[in-house]
Length: 54
Image 1 (cartoon, rainbow, N blue to C red):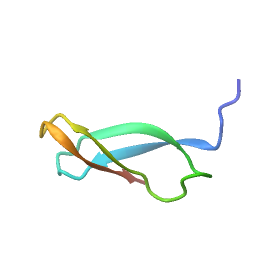
Image 2: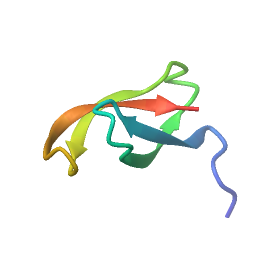
Image 3: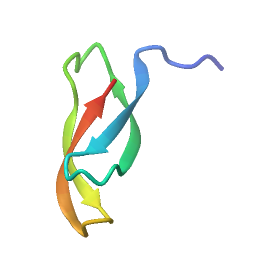
């Protein structure tokens, strides 16, 4: 089965400066801008902003 080319893997890095990352997918046709999500960073034990890095 062919992989869907519209959805590509992106890496989300914590803005808390811990270096913790999440890997997720996003649809580049619907979201051409960089992704920003509030997610849990276990190194600081709180929810912080994670930004997409390229």
